[in-house]
Image 1: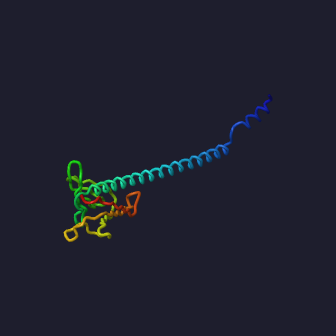
Image 2: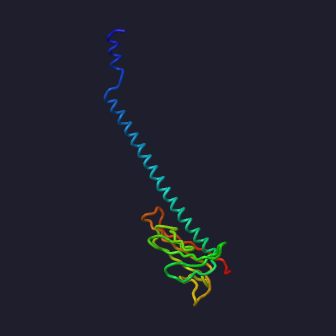
Length: 176
């Protein structure tokens, strides 16, 4: 090989500065797109997990209210601030109350007060008696026990992933 041939081969082998800059720019664009895709995926997963946890919390609370009311033995008692009644259990009857305080639904059972659902702005109870819905449960003037209870919850959307109005109708058992 002659010296001129060697110089021609060495001049053609390798990359120019412009080629390296173009390759780095393309790599940066592809990396940026990949990072954006990962961030979007993680954000969607976080929102989905939050919604799933909120829906599970709502489902547990509604299940507890339903089970309590299905075991009702006496009441509900007329009280504008809370729903109170007697519930049957294997160890005997005990009182249960539900009320709203500080944006959370509380359940008081056998003297223990627990929050069962948070981020709630409104709780409304209505009772089905004599073929119509009323805001008043049994009273001395109308002693007939209701045959159904409606629970309406206003879910606060400001801090929770799931908001809106939720309505649950629970059929009460026949009087013992």
